Image 1 (cartoon, each protein chain N blue to C red):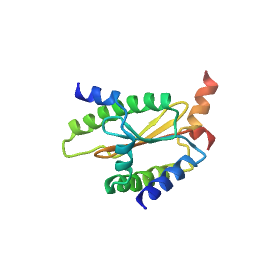
Image 2: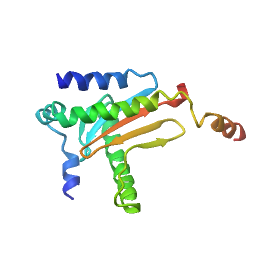
Image 3: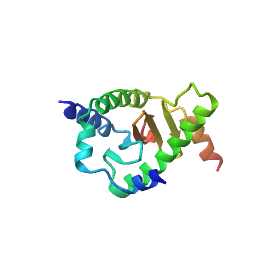
Length: 58
Length: 99
């Protein structure tokens, strides 16, 4: 119930700025964007060949 | 300095040609940063926060010493990549079709 209430409210601009400049947040961004970038750089689309076959069947 | 760093990381993702959306939300689903329009942003953050809650609980219940570290959801149109942390979630929507 408490969580629902909080979800309805947007975070204030001040709080947002505080978070963005916090060490924890900077560390999180550094770490998480690296993981995603590595995943984005995988050039192999592992679904591709199978989705083509499936599309032809339909 | 740190804010510049955050901005750089964020821009690097949003500038990627496969990336259609990037959002960073806190554990309550409130948006810290996003490049989506407000309506889509609200929809995605609400729904994905729920999905991550389920996945986190699932992993914990299978083995309480374990933790969710990365979640990829492949759909017909997109792939959603989610990096969860104690307080924040990074959500990246990519279009792998362009590859």
